[in-house]
Image 1 (cartoon, rainbow, N blue to C red):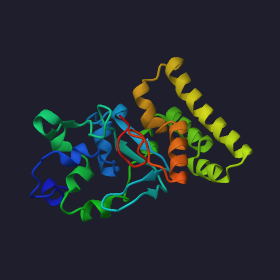
Image 2: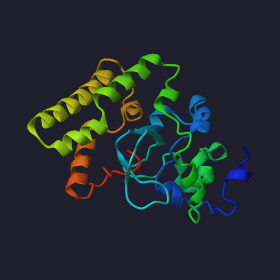
Image 3: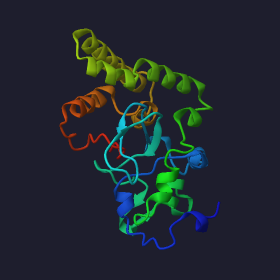
Length: 223
């Protein structure tokens, strides 16, 4: 697909969109990862059951499926592929689909494409079955939809189950790094936000309180 057919013709390349967060990836972006234009350590996963903001829509919605997204940088939301000094994307000629569609003055094309053909961890781990199976097991044992239900229940058994879920998640991450030699930068892609962090965000959501800086429940990057 030609860039002329997909990108806004009047984009000023001011960088505002890039500073608001990196793109979610879609099936056609898979070669960017497989060929090394985007590294796995530059990605994070927003998991099924998390609350997110969708382009051009007010408020938050709960995800019915995961999103693999480019991380933020420097403790903020700016896409880590963005080069501030040049006000340009570091892979502009091969930028992801959402970046080609995005027009800050007309979000309709991006909004229409947002839910279609999303890239998943299973797609990107097809050649690494051990990690693919590990991710699937973590998803089963740390199901965020179940965590939301446990928080709503609010009883002692539910609280214990949440503690077990968060402890398993933390211990798995620690063991993979300390004993397995895993690059810590891959944890955000493999397992998303730590379960303990997600539970804190869920509690704030239930209580109506604001998310803390750097723990926004939307899709902006994990720094």
